[in-house]
Image (cartoon, rainbow, N blue to C red; front, side, top):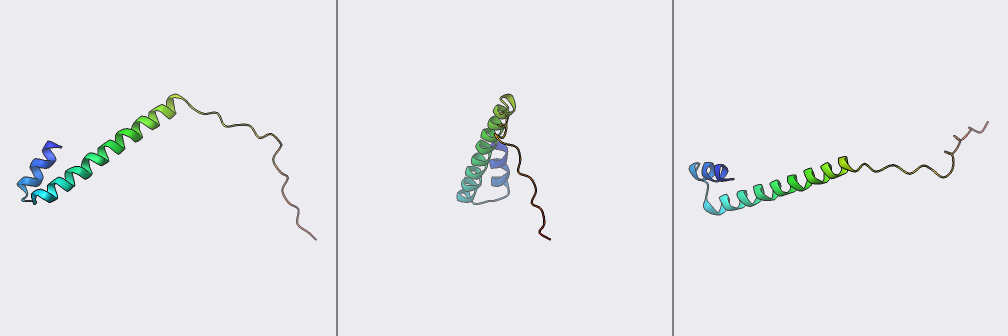
Length: 64
């Protein structure tokens, strides 16, 4: 984040715009961390799909 802030300032980006970009970057980082944690938890605890209670329906036959 510091490197991004330094690069934006060096490029002459307005301070209020730098703040907005850094806020968006922080939000994106947190979203990525949460997603990674959720996916890791899902991989560690796979959910078994329930078996159907009745057999699958037979395909419909065409009328003559």
